[in-house]
Image (cartoon, rainbow, N blue to C red; front, side, top):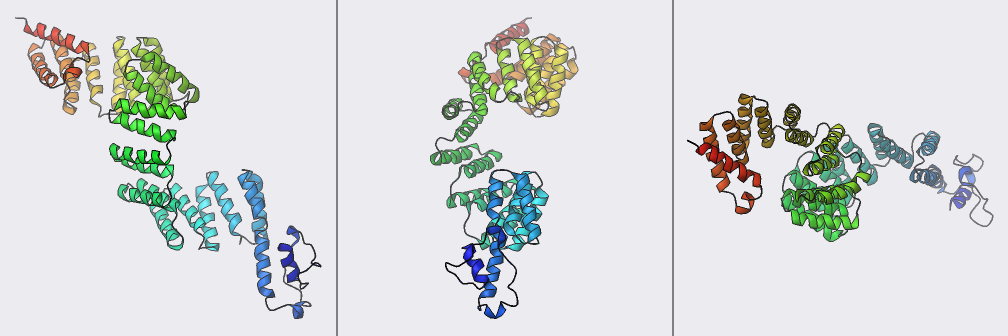
Length: 452
């Protein structure tokens, strides 16, 4: 087709006598003045078509280099083409913008996509990429405006609705975000759209609605391990450990080496005090993610449950090295050091945990126990009062009563024991018998305060 067009432009006619012209030898200059009287009326449009073909003749080479990820040679070829045609080539600019974005030069890629849009303002693909670059730059409102413009000039596109939903999600307009994700699924269902919609409900702490979304995603993609794992984690948040373990087990069937799934399943096993099985699970995950702070934290608490305190501290300190701002690691280190009688170290880790997460009342209770062992009764009582003020827990009152009794304040100890009895009596029988140590301390405290 290219050779025939070149022959027509030179007035030779189309036929067996057409001269063969190679792709990179197409003459795009206007015909000479000598040949002008012989040109047909449509020759000028033919020349324009020839120029368009010449501009696009290397597009396949650019595309081939791009999909091979040979970006260096691809950029060299793009610059050559742009220099040859004064930058008036849409596709080379588009591919150059894609490469720049993959290299992290988002602002430059945005400018290039805008240049491609200026050359062809009715190409929806250009507008979508402009919107994507604005989204990556955090300019979510501007990105939404661009996507709206793309929808006005194009057909229904799930990707546009999906990306608008992402923008609204980061703007915290969750209702609009959910609407956009639902519109995207009406056009064409995708796992990623279900995942993001579920994430919006999770951010709103509407876990049941999030589970419904993910269950709908399973109907579309029943063997997706990520969706199965996410459902399991949501059930874990709701305290439904058995249902959570079912979905996590199904996920491991499809992807037995998924570290996130193994970590979640191992934590459930660990909660049921089966430390050896949990450690076997964690060993598999450690091969995939050896630098996971959450993994080493769980391994450390497994060793703590097996009363192997040195191994526990070693694992927890490795977790703390990997993620020094994770409050639960400092909290667990405080528990281990308190259990081994290293009260000064326990005080350090509990204080660190409270600085990172000040709204967890149990941290204040254990800090109070530590301070009492360090003979700082006033600050210990203040920590107990802080914990009780945040949450009314029977364990807080019991430990407070023990501390007061040990300091000789029997009157206040009796008051705290009375508060403990009220809260403890409201619990069900299973919860009451779950920790024998609580019953033991209760009986000892009652007998000590009953002495004349």
